[in-house]
Length: 104
Length: 168
Image (tube, rainbow over the protein chains, first blue to last red):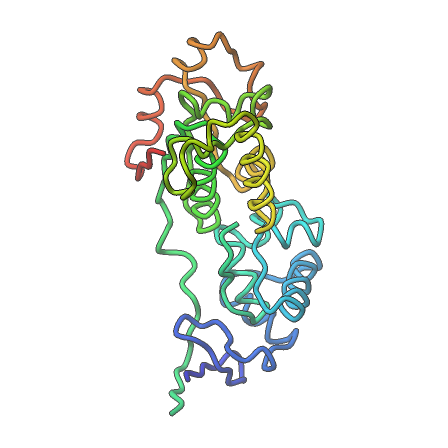
């Protein structure tokens, strides 16, 4: 087990920095995690992140970009703008869930 | 044992920047349409630039009149583990195609046209092969609107200088 300190909080993470205990996550932490990877959270970012959280809770799996787009109605192109280059991993990181394992 | 480290943040920026994948899609069977699209989609999701060149039978994937009619046949494919003669029975191609479409949909993977929509929305580039177009008497009007052009193999090689190349 590894921990890291984000702001003044100590959180449990895997080797790459993804949260390993979803219970440690809250909105304030999400803003800080986003800032670590150069993202300033807006209402639109939150729409995607909330979906990632709720979908993970019900499916026990992190959603892919395609799934986030289908369930939120946010076009894929916009997800690439909101979370540049690696949207699925960035969304998972901010939402405090594991990296998605789906292919598509 | 818990090890506290000051700051662990995923490295999202450095490992793929500047990487380009060039994928040559030469097959028009339903089953062989997918590998190139899945790899292109995965590459784009990792911040890798992707160019797809559709040639020979692969031209069907971007041809409006054909892209929704790709088929799968067990004939000549020993990996289906069926008696090969079965593949030649009338109606078998249609049945096998239907089953494969169902299996693909069951894992939430879209049909080829929708998959290409997603690839383009993710920043992927689609190119048609000049020779394939000329052989079949097709023009850009016959292709998906988001195909960026019908180009020669030489042009594609030029456009993808330095890229990693996949032939499917």
